[in-house]
Length: 173
Image (tube, rainbow, N blue to C red; front, side, top):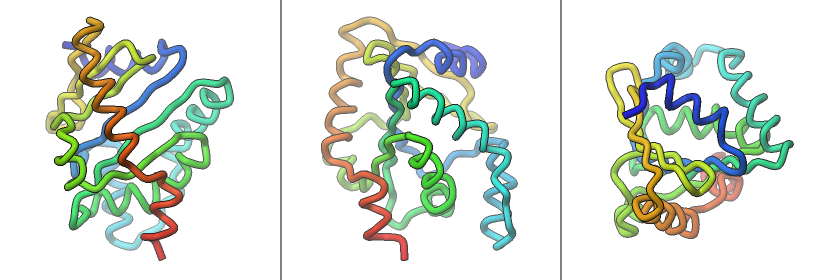
């Protein structure tokens, strides 16, 4: 089991691609609590607290690395998902992240894992574990045979999902 710090270090070491299955209906990350509260209250947010993340995505994708995810969308969507999709996702996509949307019912049909995971360089999997302060750590899987089911889950989710821009065009007024 990797600590949160050890898990975060994986983002400094991947060489080609990082991909995430985002299956939870909400995340309780400390740095997102106040921005989410402000959004729910209709208060402004300059988003400076996350700007470095988007700059990092821009840098790594400009360097030729691929960075993507599939977000599973619940029906009805949660406050967190509405915030994430309307406020946080457009700048991430603009920075170069390939984000796709998959309805939760379809995710169940595809028999996707019930835990979020990151797949790094198509060779290492970090299965996320959550605590009261968001990501608590991750189980690192590097055995080729054990990684294969995660690659297959990624492929099923990717093929069945819709690119964020296409989804937003049909769903955001």
